[in-house]
Image (cartoon, rainbow, N blue to C red; front, top):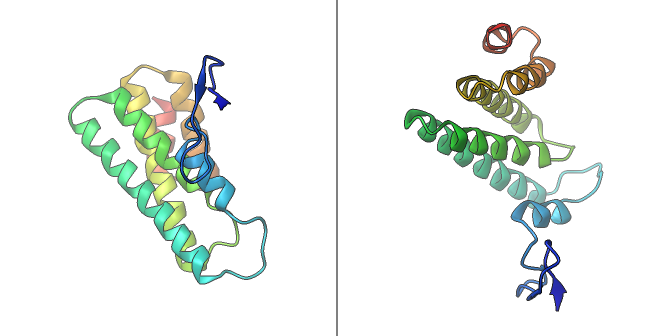
Length: 146
């Protein structure tokens, strides 16, 4: 028996050996190798899967934004950003640009959603993160100034 995160009762160990409170990102982080000099085919597949999950979260955020569900949209964009940030170097060159573009899009999208939610400090922090990636990003500059 393993105690739950809230300390109440116990939760069973999952089949693959992970406790019930372990999130998918916890499992992915543990499976990601440390610093390496050579990118293996398995690492590329894992990176592609992570990017695909991040893209799905971005699409979910876009759908929630269209439905005016700003809180859900912000959560989806945040999940996408966390997934992208889980990718560890070395990242193949062809994936670096896609990874950077995806993170930047999710950051600027999250900024507009936070603006709709009137979380002005969140907008500034999110735009600062976007501007760290691209100091000339017009969306981030504009949204930070709003």
